[in-house]
Image (tube, each protein chain N blue to C red):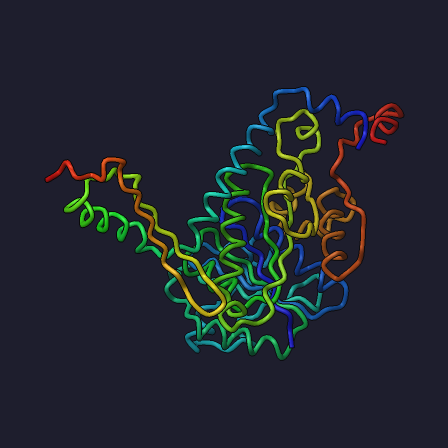
Length: 269
Length: 89
């Protein structure tokens, strides 16, 4: 039985796809058989971030409509043999997804994989709803910014009331918060909400803090999940997040402004 | 908590403004999130009916849905004006 993880946020552009790609690759690199599904029907992008856009033949909607089977549609990652990508359809709309269809695909994937990562579209409409409906775990992605935090809170409410687990009165979805595009320097200047501020409002366990980093754009330019860029801050932050997801207790990095000398270190106490 | 935290508190910073606004907004969102979508309309229509008999203000009525373990309660509060609103007749 696979564990189903939804990466969600409400707001667009906060780093859901980057996070889904990084978490899926991170889990696969640690030996878990992992698949990652793009739920953003009509605006598919996961294949681009994963660097497999030219290998897409069949997609998620084809599988739901039984125009192709899973084996034909899943794309095996060239860097990690444990990782498979199920791309979204670019030509259909979100109505092509049905609850039964998504459920059937997830059930079939569950037999073959340890983890299924669902990359949610932005918004709270059908695609986002179906991406979270069957989830066991949720990674809620938020920037330290007002509209993003507000939308994340809204999404947390939906996770706890509209999911399959909520409807069946089962144990609720296990939620994790991932704060992305964090700039410790701006936080220190009082120009950005701190991790503590965001945690105080959203009240979820913190999976990680991904610093604002050039590495994220560079990696997406090249179609490489940033978690593979082991020398970069964002790559390391995602590695930490994967470790924490798997139960390791690691201290959070990239939260403080590191451009300090001896004095700074003394002040931090 | 380091010494820097003391300096932080003295600055009138936009992050503090953001946090204060968010706290208010999120509390409000959470209150209205579980409400059925018909509540707003119900409130308006009730107000029209009540005004046939008593002269009340727009804010004299409040509706809340509460949930116990085994039942749902629709609580309607109507505040009558001091003079009983009788001046209509």
